[in-house]
Amino acid sequence: MDWNQLWQILSAADNVPIIAMIPLLAFYIYLAWKQAHANDKLIDELAANPALAKTHHRKTWPFKPGWQKEVHVWPFLLRVEFLAAIIVTIILMVWSITLNAPLEEPANPNLTMNPAKAPWYFLGLQEMLVYFDPWIAGVVMPTLIIIGLMVIPYIDTNPLGGGYYTWKQRKFAIGTFLFGFVILWVSMIFIGTFIRGPGWQWFWPGQTWDHNRLIYEVNRDLPDLFGITSNLWKGIFGAIVVGGYFAVGGLLVNSLFRRTNPKDYKRMSLLQYSIMMTFFLIMVALPIKMLIRLLFHIKYVWITPWFNV
Amino acid sequence: MPEENKEKTGNGKPGLLGQFKEDLDALKTDLPAKAKEQVEILSKPTKTQVYTSIFRHKHDDTPRNRALGVLSNVFLHLHPAKINRDAVRYSYTWGMGGITFYLFFVLTLTGVLLMFYYHPSKVQAFRDVLYLEHDVPYGKLLRNMHRWAAHLMVIAVELHMFRVFLTGSYKKPREFNWTVGVILLVLTLLLSFTGYLLPDDQLGFWAVTVGTNMARATPLLGHEGPFGPLLHMTPYNDVRFGLLGGSIVDANALLRSYIWHCIGIPIIASVFMIVHFWRVRKDGGISGPAPVVLDSEVKEAKK
Image 1 (spheres, rainbow over the protein chains, first blue to last red):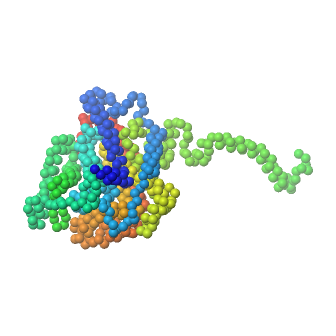
Image 2: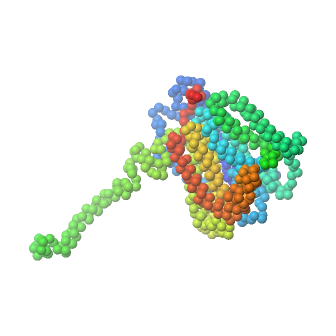
Image 3: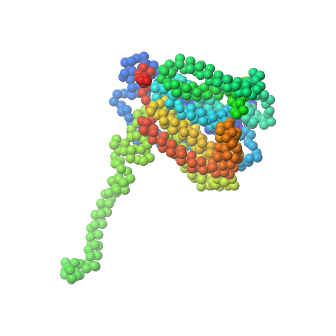
């Protein structure tokens, strides 16, 4: 265990935000879960008792008849905002006094940094470069993430759960988002920051960074495993595998979705449904590609003269 | 009054000196009266013309004045006069949207101050940062604050998006504002990324080199991307060349980065922020905490 190495990575000034983000994220997930749990309990109670449902004020917070439903922004909201601004300022001040922004040697194109890392919030994309060619990891995937986020309100037809925390009413939406945000995005940033060392090689936390380490790893392409040698057949084979993934995966997700969310399935139009399917399958393809690379050393699935997937 | 004391002119009015003496006598009584009046006016400052010209309403503690205090103030009128009693609870909103905006404000302020000490040229940039850190009073604090506020802003934006998702706040009628928010997320990341190169040190240089190298592989528009060569893309005319103003990360890239960072993206982001905040109000204020809805109460839309 190389504690010095571990400390150097953890205490690198630009890594501090990630260290801060992990407990922060854990806290807010807990805060959201607590409220979702309380709301779900209330929803179950009201669903079981229609008489109560008619009279209840529908929130977990106390409310009595005669209480004002609205409060003045001045001072009830403005004082909260003012307090928040003061607290953020204090945090920022203390942080800026105690920790210096990193400054390395002057830029030198002849001296490559190893590892050369992007800013932490882009390390998920940089980590994707291991598993995909740059045109997918650096261009297509970010574009799809942005478009995928933007279409969410238009494909989520579930009318429940607007304006309050809940889990039971929105299992699919919240499960998918947690998977994409916490499992994929945050954990890939974590890997990119704390695991990847020189040569973008995998170093477990506490393992000494060895700049001379060589890994004798033979990456194969999927068509090679099936003994396909001609370029034409490699292209056709890859197209079948990738197309097959979307077809079989699509049918599986379809069964799963139709059975677990029959109402949403009924509400969604063909366009909404196919857009959701496409983004969902592309998102799931990422960890699958990661796993077949890490476990089976398979680099490309689909090889063509113009692009490789 | 004796006759000889009055210096008379032909038309019976007092002469110049007499008039002056009259004014002087009048002053003796007018001045104390006016002074008394003035003290009375100033003892109620909220009634003065200056005050009423600035604040268009009274300052008494009445519900009406509390509402007007928000509505008639250009900085506060983003808020409604009254909000849901539970909407002020921190546990619901986490305050991350507001904190993001506050951090943008802090970044603008510290950023402008940093611009006074920075030249976006290969010769000067790195030395400017050294000068800032070692010679400018509070220069180091200034740079640290700018750096950490930028990181905090990225975290705050992501948590804000997380909260909005978990509370289903993107649902009807707020769909469009969510897409505006996604654009603002991207702009936040780009703002941070363009700032990374500016110290012109190894960290920024290689981070931007790694980042922009991906642009080589853009399909159709990059010289190493799928179908790029078919469209005659070379390192000297593709999308990466456009981003860097050259085929390598050099002086032009530094200048472009600087202009995008300090002028281009902040203006674009401000426009989207205006739309974002405006739409929050127009779409009915913040989404909750709303009363829970039961599955049995949903009315299915007719198809």
